[in-house]
Length: 213
Image (cartoon, rainbow, N blue to C red; front, side):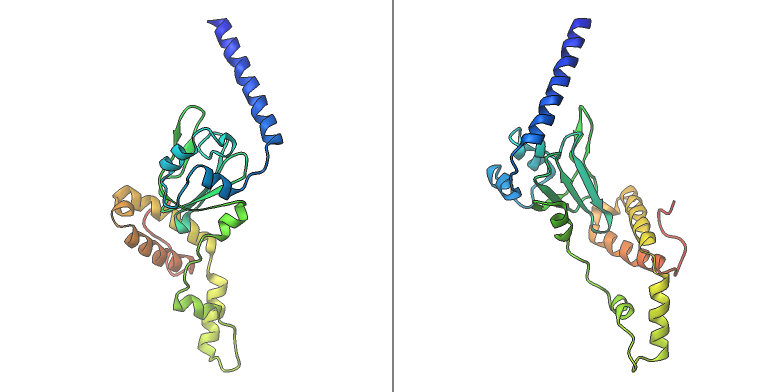
């Protein structure tokens, strides 16, 4: 038994060295090349993407313990990529992120929105939220014809709005909505409530919200 453990450990070290060598010597492939070769399509679930990749692109498989991911809670988006960094997958409608250990991987949920050659391209692909009329007013430059009340509103809003508070509020409210089932049963309503409450919270209009820690 002891000898078997030693042999398996030696094999693991050898495999790790070979993986590292392969990564350093691997030829750069494009995101579109990987997608075409594995017949990857938009709106794939993470499980479907996992099945499509198989073992062809091991270093660019985002469902391993060595892979990486980045969540953008405000948009319910997750970007995932493998150690090869040749392709970055953008998933929308994500409430359960990828969680992979050494022996087990939970792919999580979401629908594949797009894939890109770089992380920056993946980030830039996420659509910006449409500004509300109030937000547009806050961003309007001051003019000589602007009345004193509007100038005061613009000045106060720009100094009190806290984007960090908004993100924290959004994340904690998402967890609260998941706990009571709203996040799954009516996602559109959940998002609308979170946006409204967290924007006013970030503006300092109130100090509490559902799920605040």
